Length: 392
Image (tube, rainbow, N blue to C red; front, side):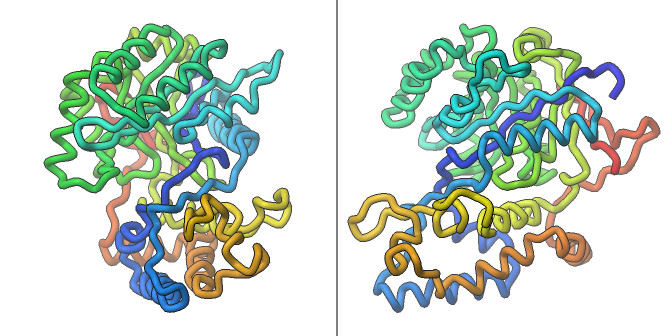
């Protein structure tokens, strides 16, 4: 890693992040693994038989199984051990800064920046902005202002807030997974609203993100869009499970301030895709699902089972974990047991090579297949970002 001093990990989620489950039926369909789909559907049919109604996943959210301390430790370990660089780690939970605030310790050798992933409704669509390195003394007030916009959006309010964030020289604003259609509008509608956002607000957005959980085809299109709009590109891992991010940023900078300043002024970046990114995207998602559903006997009580980490607002009781609805918290969701077990097994490290070979032979999934280059990196792409894949 000649010429670089740090590896920068952006976009990780912790147990403070509330992840809406409305995507779940679409995710099962996207996997296109027939027996899992049938098992899950059988469980949902069983729920409908027992309760007399369909389970509404839009009234549910889940929380990742990892704490902020775990994320910082695993991201730092990967960068230091695999790349031999100093590590900078920025966590971005959805619309909250509770995770990084919990790690603010006086005298820390490498302070954890106060960052978050901001949900912005815009032009009938929804986008996510990674807002990194907020001013510590004003982070709570800024978070409240950003949350107020999410709850009550308006074009002028958005421009004012983005201009305010841009006015903080140490803050970095990244448009996360820009081509991910969060609301599942039509493709042309999503692209039209995205282009409108970049035209109207692009001067206050400092980079586009290539995302460690999105497909290679989608990320390649993001690179083309970055060239079209003359914007730098940054890597965001978007991890929600126990495995470290599959993409990181490389920089000669030694501090957050230096890194942010270089991106905002020089508008150049170096993105590194690690070998784990070569897994087909649905297998990376499946591994995360296995992490989310797995039991962790060493965790504190109330965080050990997935039934304690998935919350529903059902039957007028308000938000409670699934376990609340199951025999006073002691029961098991028998109608979901087979599907949960199947996902945990299929998401395990032991089966991933077999599944990857199977899906690759069938041509089912898009994935990166970049060949080693002479300097040990893989297929460098000359864009606003220098992009390479690290060899095994």
